[in-house]
Length: 216
Image (tube, rainbow, N blue to C red):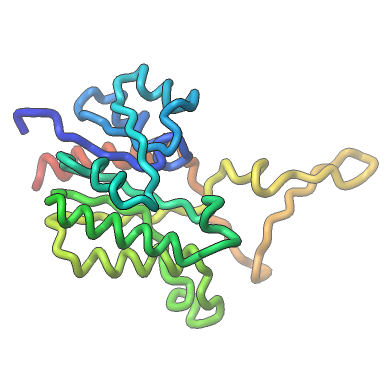
């Protein structure tokens, strides 16, 4: 490409998006449009100081998504099940958001959509754990995207963030000796918990982009 590709990164001040946008900015190879609902936050201003175009976008507002995707070559899209407008209120909203964004990406002629997805819990567990909402919703969006005809699509599957230990799952000082227990829900005695340092997300995306630009 004679010009730097324009890459859209949603959730740019969050965990996944923040890792991706900072890693992409560090290469100097791309124009980055960082999406956030609050462009005046400290994190948004920090991204702007590094050269990102910070762009106000609520993923539930169609017009804002249309504006955000205008002129883009590539988009990294992650939706947030823990958004206050979704969790505990309307779990189906995340799926609607994802499908709307995919429709707009198709309409805008996006060349490459990278969507942060999850497996279908019902299928993967053989029906043992049916309809884990944020897994199911994201996977429904993935299946929808597969049929849309966007030229290039990639689905990123990330495991449990190691950063969740100490945030969502707080260590407990359990007795007089000061021993610390870490309480994490397991379903079977020999379950294993796969972990990823969310800061590595962006590095993996960069490697992936390099490979695809070379061979595609």
